[in-house]
Image (cartoon, rainbow, N blue to C red; front, side, top):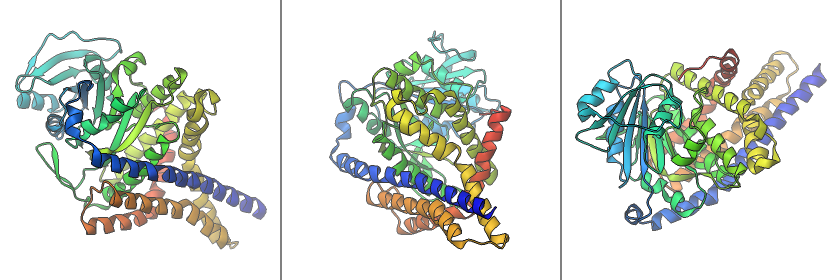
Length: 454
């Protein structure tokens, strides 16, 4: 028994060492990319970009379900974004509150007899409206079908070359589209593009713009600040060098509309429609000989609200992990398949081994720690190894991400805020991360019981 436990302990330590070494590898890949992009930004003339003759048109899609508290802010923000060829499409997905009425009153909507494409099958549309004060605003009132169905309706309705997805609780920086469009102009074959998400909680918003950047006051959203920094500043940048990103956040992603139409849009049967559409495009691109299809650049920024209560973040993280399981199961044919290059041999195996099953290894690690501590056969060497490898490396990577933030695009400029971020990166590992284990394991329960909810 002792030999088995010792062997299993070393196996768990080896798992965390391999996974965290891969995280470290990602940040090594990301560092030169972010500094190169930082230098490029200082030389770019965004005014000239907006005046370019071949500038693609963009449809900003805003799905809304019972969002009476946020929907006007989202539309104001979309109007405030600098971009010459944009249309704003708000999809009221069967809201049961005052969402639609608020838009109707604020923007003087009138019903129009617009015939739209039905290339992607969606729930029934009850009416299409246009603003008398801002003609670029279209509002679609439809039956409830979930976020993916709402986005599909917007894609059918749009006439633009590209479409941008955003959440109603997200605020785009005014130059975000001009920055986001750059890869579509300079790199052949780009089909989708992701930008950086930062935490809106605590910030001051006026007229649809972030007026002052602050850290959230509560511990739960504040810890998510450093979590998002780690995920975006090295995670997604590192994947650029490994065949492109696997997930473009649904709150801030830019897509080639023609290609998404050809792929029949978002899968409405999953709770992770952003992961699914990204992987669907990646798979299709590689089957058609395109190895440079989806990327991430750090300087376009959107600010999004995150859960500030444990019950809310528990539901969010459970749903996220349920979505990861759903999508990996759907695209299992890509796993370890050399036909798909780095996507099949690195990207998908990482999502399976480093993301999907990771909570079970973390739970096993804690189980081993408690076994050794309370069984009288304490092996402090293995205990320390597990804690250092699983949490110490993650803490170190978070610190490096904060340093990247400080030395490059630096949205948090006040010294006390930066100090707090280092503190939060330490506190993240005590309690918060342990709760993640159970939320993510619950995602398996939700998947196997077939419970799905937007």
